[in-house]
Length: 79
Image 1 (cartoon, helix red, strand yellow):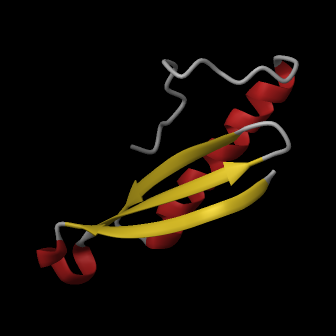
Image 2: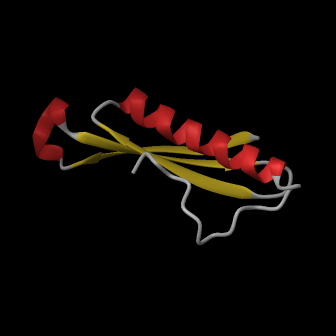
Image 3: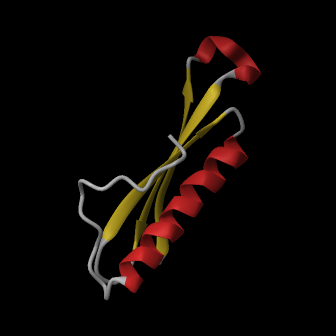
């Protein structure tokens, strides 16, 4: 599993340091790629949520014999 892209967006920029941030992270392994999202008031916390979701999805995929989860399933708890 490797990191492909990491993007941070400030949501509602009028809040200054109180603004929420959204972290979008794209991952890939030898057979597939996927994106995860984290949202928080803290960029490190939002990044952690995106990382945890990516690892969770990869573990689910490995547990299921390499099959990617269906696109209609939502494993994200960070949004």
